[in-house]
Structures are given as structure tokens and as C-alpha cells.
Image (cartoon, rainbow, N blue to C red; front, side, top):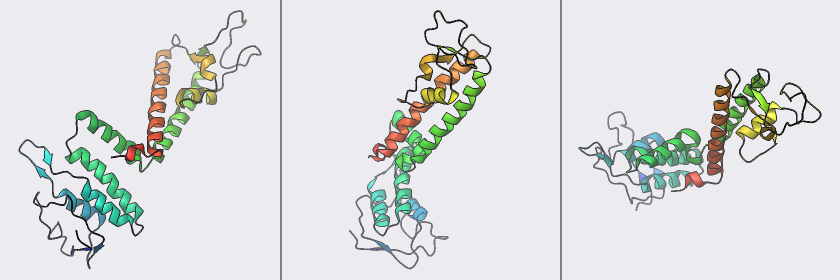
Amino acid sequence: MAGQLADSWAQHGRRRNGHWPAGGRLRLDGFTYGGIGGDQPATVQQRLAWIRSQYRQGPSGRWAGFAPQPYEQLATVHRQPGRDSDARTISIARRADLRRYGDLARYQRAANWLLDKTIKYGYQTWRAAAGLVAVYVIFLVASVIAQHHGLMIPAGNITGLHPVPVATRCMADYPCFYPAGYAIDVVIPIVNVHQADNWGPNGHAPWGWAWATATWLATGLGWALATLLVAGYTGLARQQ
């Protein structure tokens, strides 16, 4: 344990690891320090490269030596003086490096990659919210087009109704079709404004199969993005 880590990165161009051992000869797991000093302190990216220099690649191509503690220690030291942005960068890097250098099963790597590319492990949850809004707007525009091209038909009970309800015209005895409400029912999970109960895709129309497929895809994306949003907002995605 060190009270303060004071090393020099002035010759970073010549010694890319700040004079620390490289090539897998460095061991940082368990090394703790209360702060970072020195006349030429390393940047966050240099410190991350410093941590990564302890990993060793075996003959099989697999990496060894990954440990979360050096990242957590570095993030703590940056968070204490209020450098929260740097601490988040380090926390994101720790999770991404687990995929690159850690011993994960394929499904774990896939889940890690998904969290990285979507919500940055819960540190950029707004990405899921923005994606959900984007899917809703795109599907809303598509619903307006479908409304005027015979791609929407009544999904409820229309027995005895003459004429048969159509999406482009309101009738007194059947709910009107509203593209905004239909997009909510299809894209936004749990919320139900009952448009999808009364209207659905016309699979028999030209390109009806494509519209039905787009509806299923929009529902799937809506659920996936909403799940990521909840996981990021509740902190579930940040757990160890």
C-alpha cells in the first residue's frame, strides 16, 4: 500500500509505460494507493494502458492476468477529488476489458458486448431511451403510411358492422385508428392504449407480410431497449 503514487510519465514517448515493467511483467492486483502525484502524471488513457500492460497472452492466444481491483482502485482515486467523468471512463474500461482479457463464456461475452454497445454498462443509460424514442418515431411514420395503403385492418369484433371499418375513416360504432396510439401499443412495453386490440396488420395486402414483420421487429426492439433502460436506471447493469 502506498500513501501516494508518484511516478513520472515525462518520457512517455520513449517509455510507453511510464518506466514501469511492460510485457506482462507488471503485477498490480492488490496494489493500493491513496492518491496520484508527480510532476508529469499520466492521463486516464495512459493509466488504463498501464493496467493492461500486466496481461500476458499465452501460446493459445488467450489472455491471463485480468483482475478488476486495479481498475476499481484507479476509479476510486479519481472519484475522491470529484473527477467523476474520469472515474466513469475507468469503470467502463474495466467492463470492456473483462470481455477482451477475461475468461468469459461465449454468452457472457455476447451480453458484455451488448451492454457496451448500447448503454455502456449503465453509465450512459440515455442511449436506450434515445433508441426507444427513435424506434417509436420510425414506427409512427410507418404506421401513417400503412394507414393509407390498406395495410391496417380491424382486429376486433366487426360482426354486423356495415360498412366494414377502415383505418382511414372513423365510424361511430368502432374505435378509430390512431397511428400515434398504435405505435405506443406496438413499441412501448406494458403501456396499452388499446389500439392494437382493435387494429392489426393486413397480411393479405401487397407487402402485408413486410408490414407484419416490421411490427414484430418493432415490438422486439421496444422490449429490448426498455429492458436495457430499466437495467441501466436501476444500476443492475453496473453490478459486478
